[in-house]
Image (cartoon, rainbow over all chains, first blue to last red; front, top):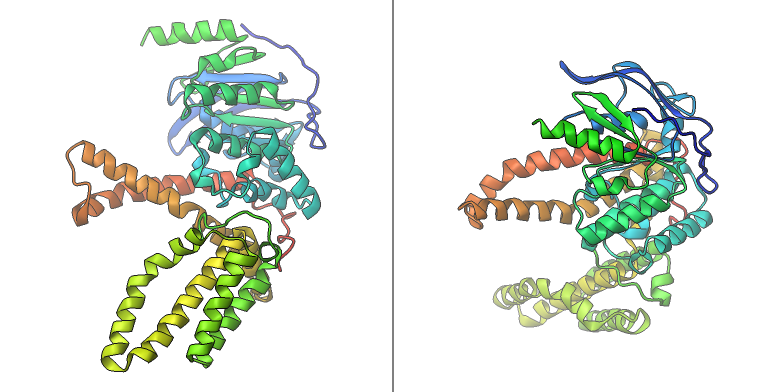
Length: 246
Length: 213
């Protein structure tokens, strides 16, 4: 069950363009003696890729490999031809990362300042920073909260803020690590809509199988390796079959 | 400072953060150098006119900041009445009240980022010693950001323990909260460090905030 549907390269507005693919060549990863990923050979070119699997199957480590938060202990990960091991900063400019817990990635006390943080790191000029912050806050329904303390936002608003803080940097690809796990149904749907409407290529690690509707490709992880690689319906069926035996 | 900014448009809000902090410092020096009733009354009146008038701050906002200090002020007044005289105590009370209110006006009219930018600007000469001012600013901003987050997690742990029959209050509750809270804070710090990396905090392109004023 393999799908290789090539899609038009995505371009974040004024951001890096995906000129190629994410390639994993013979990738393995271990935390000390514990092998969490092994034998991964993948080429990711699709716009919407889902990653599912049981807890501890290695899918979050896989996500971390894609922007160099984790480096392979064997093999290599290439993003548009750039190695995460040797060209980490260039890779991170291309690949944004949204964590499961928004509280752990919002670093500034107020909403607008947090969104601006990534732009400061990119060296964007003050005038353009202000424009981009205003635009992205408006797009995600946070314009009325720009000077509000981040800790007073609802869970859904915090996740949207975390997403806004990444997207304002205009990466060509975005990796989401369980973005809806902590959210109620309405906010899950809202985040799902946001992901569906993104111009960027996305990789979404999730336990929320509904989130995968409309995706181009879904990888099923088990025991540190990909056991199914198919369109959503087939991959979810394979995953449910896998889980039914446990 | 956390969540005290009151977003309205006013000349005081638009004034540079450095100017407001300098004015606050000057007021402190004046009040301590000239401890008299006229100066104290004049300072408090000036601060109130600035806060309630020019800055269009609600009275309740200033009251919320001043109220926690009132017991201390009353104790001070009582102390001065015992060891010196009420008039001297009154001047001291007026002096502290003016400064607390002035500080509340500054924090309510200045975004945290602007205050942090001033700190970064003040730290700029330390670059020769290898200090990175933007890092100092980031640490201050993150401290302000994570105080409520950690307080919330501590409350959650105490609730979870109470739900299982543990103490919800008192020294015993704090003792049993400390270790799980420490574990959570370390996990949070780990994810935060990854988030900082992912958002380019270590990128050489990072430049100091514009408008360090």
